[in-house]
Amino acid sequence: MARELSALLTLRDFERAAGSVLDAASWAYVAGGAAAQLTVRANAEAFDQVWLRPRALGGTTDEPDTSVTVLGQRLALPVLLAPTSPQRLLHHGAEISTARAAEAAGSLSIVSTDSHHAFPEVAGAVKGGCWFQLYAYRSREDVAATIALAEDAGATALVVTVDASYAARRVTTWRAGFRTPAHVDFGNLRSLGILTGEIPDGARIDRLPLTWEDLEWIRAQSQMPLVVKGILRAEDAERCLGLGADGVIVSNHGGRQLDGAVPSLVALEQVATAVAGRGLVLMDGGIRSGVHVAKALALGADAVCIGRPYLWGLGLAGQKGVEAVLDLLKHEIEDTLRQLGADSVADISADFAVRAQIRPSLAQGDIL
Image (cartoon, rainbow, N blue to C red):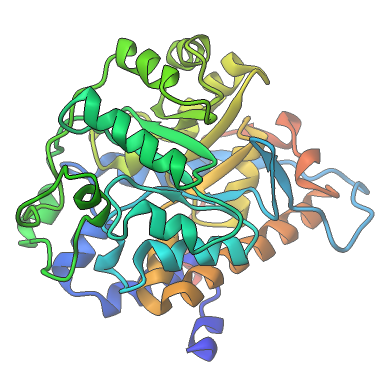
């Protein structure tokens, strides 16, 4: 398997390989988005409208520093693993394999409330800690119990997702006839007593719609650093910080909620300008290379999160597959820094990027 993984030279290679081993319905669930999937495509295509400006005679090292500090934790690369579920759909190790891969690569995993394995099991499988992503279910009492479970298990940050309160129109998944397989569970929700019956067919349980008052209440429940995921407006980012959040994740849920939502990269600049160093700014959506990571950093992100790409690796080879995805990205980021004339990720600033409406034409044989 190691030899097979080494033959995958780009994240698109991982995508094609994973698509060839998953059944059609499961692949539709992983790859698909809302409605016509305009935002899924636009998330990646937005990077094509940002161009990098190398600095002449700038770099002085063959081994540029890719490390960043995120909420006080030093990471080997500016890439975190976004919360996704159900990971058991792709590999029996699910979130445990993902968290171990993140730790091995010097990154960290954000674990979903909807995880197959209960969060204490996942957190206990690594030494460096995980972040916990919060969905609100049933009542404030249940939300408080969920936060307490995460805190007691050693979560190092709480990530509140605010853009997925309502079920989305995932037409491609419906057309593919996706039903949650019997081997997939929501062990974390079972441990909390939120799920007691059969596994839902569409891999989703109804959630509580969150309000600003709810977010303020959630902030008061824990001393953990708080990050709000699903922010696309500058004024929303400022309001999050005003309520005590330590940062935001610029995200449209990978295009899986509202078709036609602004691409994350397009929203990033305004959000980063509004935050202006007063909190952490992460982004996800459409990252498909180390060059994409550099573009996001130049537009104001402190680091990025990836979702589908690491799931491709997980589906191919479990922990080793996720490690291979992160290793590829690290090498691509290093190469990008060298080519830009930058010695470290910290050197990347706004003057390295420029927007231009240019659409390169690729011959079929040139497509990566």
